[in-house]
Image (cartoon, rainbow, N blue to C red; front, side, top):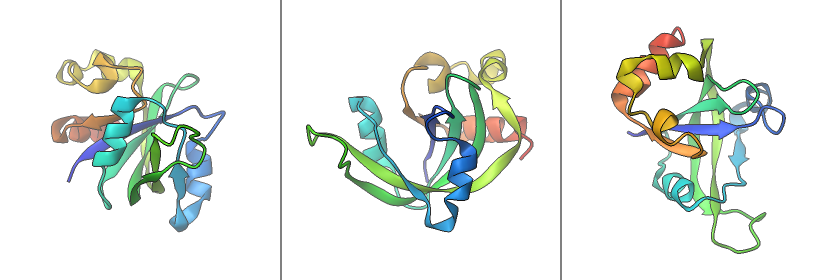
Length: 137
């Protein structure tokens, strides 16, 4: 199973709001980048993603599970983009800031470091293990 990282500005949708959504989860919409769309399309039910607070916090704060695969995003007037549904799975014991990720040599090739603007990105198994360990899991 693959791993992912999904970015959200906490002022728009925070980890706390994701947790409040409970087991039914929520949709992850608003993606308007073609590479991010392809990543959403590649997601499978049961896969996991880091929940990353962008802009204000710049840190991995939790893990979500994909509970519904790619389907059309009704907020997209062009009809080109879609979304997935996710639910909160686990909070990190301690958030992992972007600065700490950039400081870890083993994460130098992580998409978060090399393509930081991409809102939905793949995470390798090794990167997943390292970030989870950094977050106390």
